[in-house]
Structure formats: structure tokens, C-alpha cells
Length: 183
Image 1: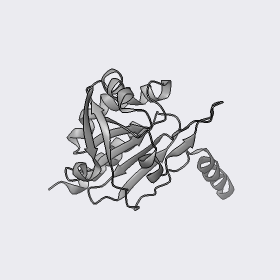
Image 2 (image 1 turned 90 degrees about the vertical axis):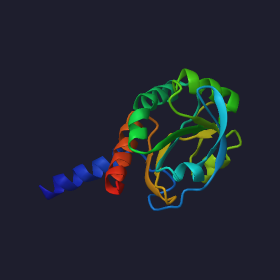
Image 3 (image 1 turned 180 degrees about the vertical axis):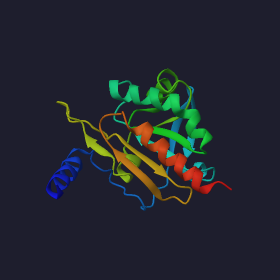
């Protein structure tokens, strides 16, 4: 029986997604970035957003690709739930601000901003770089979601190339944080 339990535990560990580069407890690198919401440009500041509560920062490989579009739709559907739990939601990829402007309207449905990081500076700072498995070998961001507490510490990170659990997992963490920090 113990052997079966150990085998099941080992199997579950081998099939879980890889973990993001920044671990819970790490300081989240501060940044500002050009972003768009509803097709309108603005400068997103992590420091300013953290003054209002936790931030869900999710990295995705490329706007308008199948998985990234699915993820954007699901985050858009949950945007009000994140806001009601006091969290700011922002997506980021290496796409240009022109692409993000269009993506923010068409796929994010004007519900939350997406930031442009064409030089990969923020993506690298968050250890979210991935070499795309294409003939060109383009460098893009991995699909990683972080929840950052107002003190600037990472309280959750999740890496999985499938978009399925990113929304559910980060929303559960934000709700838990909100419950523990209500005044």
C-alpha cells in the first residue's frame, strides 16, 4: 500500500507542469511597460498597480495564436471576478504595442490590459523566456502566470503550455489572499 502511494505521488509529480523561474517568496522585478486596454495605449506600472492590491501578471507566447486567444478569452470572462477580489490583471508578450492594441480589443474584449515587451526585458526579468519550437527558433515568452502581493513578493507561479488552469489557479490564489487580508 505504501509503495502504491509513493508510486502515485511520484507519477503525479512527473506529470505536473514545470514551475516558473520565480518562486513564491521571490521579489517580483518592478517594471513599467507600454500597454493597451480597449485599443487605447497607456503606461502600466507594477509599483502603481501594487498600491491597489495584488497583481496577476501572465505571460503568453504570441497574440492571436490559438492557445493565447483561448487564454485571453477566459481571462476576459473572469476579469470582473479578479477585480472584485481586489486584483489587477495584465497579460504580456513580446508582441509590439500595435499588436497589443488590437489584441486588447478583439481577444481581451476590452476587459483587461496587455503589455508589449518586444525587447524581452520584462520577460527575461521574470525568467519567462522560451525558444519557440519553430523553424525560425524565435524567442518568445513561456506561458507563466504570477500572482504578486502588494509587498512585491511573488505568492504564486504557474507554468503550463496549456492555457486551461491559469485562470482558475490564479483566481483561487487571489480570492484566498483577499479573504485573508480583508479589513
